[in-house]
Image 1 (cartoon, helix red, strand yellow):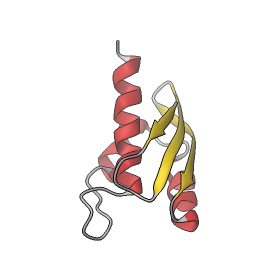
Image 2 (cartoon, rainbow, N blue to C red; image 1 turned 120 degrees about the vertical axis):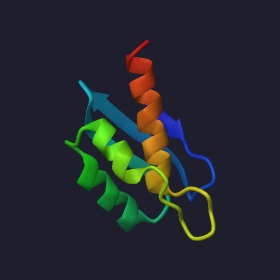
Image 3 (cartoon, rainbow, N blue to C red; image 1 turned 90 degrees about the horizontal axis):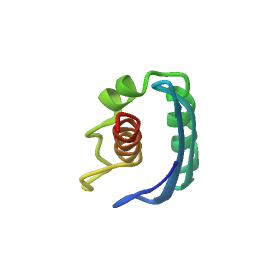
Image 4 (cartoon, rainbow, N blue to C red; image 1 turned 180 degrees about the vertical axis):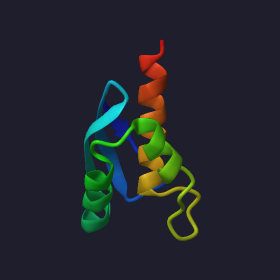
Length: 83
């Protein structure tokens, strides 16, 4: 799934989840080192655990961040899987 981000420097996040496990994450735009780090840290992690750890993180005065946007993408993917 390609998730279009809102309120952050990155434009989108390409996310793959298989059987509830995060298989692949790639940000387009944003702070390259930080987004690569977040991606590598959560690949192989349970998506629900990743959401728990990332949701609510803010970037400066913004109400969201790239990690928070990734959590939103994961929530959307999990919601689609349960339909």
